Length: 372
Ligand SMILES: CC(C)(COP(=O)(O)OP(=O)(O)OC[C@H]1O[C@@H](n2cnc3c(N)ncnc32)[C@H](O)[C@@H]1OP(=O)(O)O)[C@@H](O)C(=O)NCCC(=O)NCCS
Image (cartoon, rainbow, N blue to C red; front, side):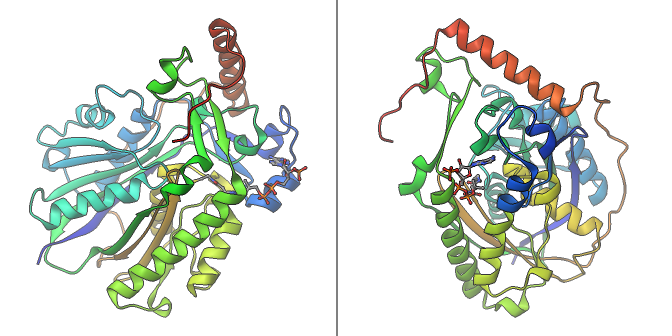
């Protein structure tokens, strides 16, 4: 039987930090509200494209696995904020790292994109289609954010991480997953202004307004992740006591708390990054996974539970059995170029561009999309 072990990991976090105090300079919000309702203190704003972050993370993950890019058969780029639609973004990463033999594809299930990408790569390895894959979770939300809407502007951040997945005959890597989509709740989170429905109606691409029903998402996300976690544990014949570490999607500390307590896992066994990075959508779980390894929180042979949710509402929970190696084989000197502006200055630039786009298009409020 062929399995798909995770043998390399690497993250790339943009350095510019946007604090709750920064957000309070242009939004009617406060550090006290954000920390008490979400657990977030700061998040990152990227000064480079998503592809540039992904290239650095990819090089670090490959060095960690001790592999040359030419040994890759597949790149899966999990994201909902692609730099371009055509050509696909995975091909940009492939070209930059020199993975000349790889097939490359983009996969979008919003915040669960990395985990669905991990499923796709694992399945292709287990069925013999490919043997070595790079799976990327990356998001650059800052250009798509409606920075004047306090309901959403405080919640998200940019970031990226990647893992290398390789064929093995040992029972390692993803040993089971439960995937699902609560499509009746798909209208609870919609970014209006990304996609042809909007550009066909005169909206400048990226000039967004967000539909967001936070309380409904909260409720459905908790239910969905608890059900998916219980289902995958049952499928694999394990109990909450067998779980060594939970690396959940980090959309809200209170959501994580509710999911793990209902799943029967104590908070000491949970990897948290939400305070420092906020919700980085597809990048959240792989960044937390990479940091858990850096901090020595994943031991050889550990059983790791990865529950997540995203717009759609897509839900999932993966069980990963770690291999013997929890330290990198090598390091890469790849790095982002230095940042010249503060995070707040970059956000103010984006806000200014959006005001301009609105006045050029002569828009009067959001474009209404029929029941979908
Ligand atoms: C968004 C979320 C943090 C809001 O927390 P909450 O406890 O449900 O808060 P509420 O929605 O009840 O809002 C309470 C009040 O705070 C206000 N508020 C909202 N955002 C605020 C902000 N940034 N600062 C200050 N006040 C804010 C609301 O307007 C509301 O005011 P009102 O009572 O006068 O109407 C929470 O619902 C959540 O995390 N939802 C899911 C997260 C998510 O979907 N992430 C993305 C998907 S991956």
